[in-house]
Image (tube, rainbow, N blue to C red; front, side):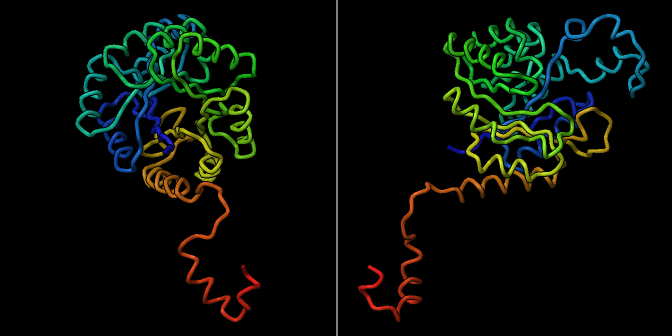
Length: 282
């Protein structure tokens, strides 16, 4: 089974549909399977006091202006939906509240995503599980108790899912990756396990691919120096194209693990072993 590669656009579009389209183009050119966004209902996700507090941004001087500046609404998502269909790439989004999940349903996306921050929001998990769409569940900032509960909710609802090992630091230090958790999750829950990475560079993602992940998610950006909290943990255009190409090569290189002479080795073996008595290498 080929690794399902997700280009996480998230909020790296900075509220601009044209930037979102450019990132969709990058994902398509690279060969990703899908792009992903994030959807929030601002007044449900954040408190009034927080939204009224000061924050300098390209959209104003308050947290509310910054959050609203980054958030796409119905018109923008209609445009994204049409553009992804035109380009022939899947899209979906991680909802951060119940209203956002209900909003996303109108687009009939094939997949759902539980962000690491939301894995403890049981009402949201139950709402998503009711849709019975394949759901990617990130496990950052959790211990077994929270993951156990999420798995129980999805299995009780008979909703297909896979876990995604994740460390929720932005960017993540390589030494914090703890990629052996991929096997730990697979063994404990007997399910497919992917990797959602926030590291700088590509090496850790390559290693995850070699550990048998079924999905890989990385944030993408046009420029890591752009405004935004996720930009520094994102992969730029050339890097993402390189990442997808390398992961596809790694998939081919892993093989089936069976020890047998490759058919392409036979003639070489005959040549290099010609001086050895025949019975010695039977």
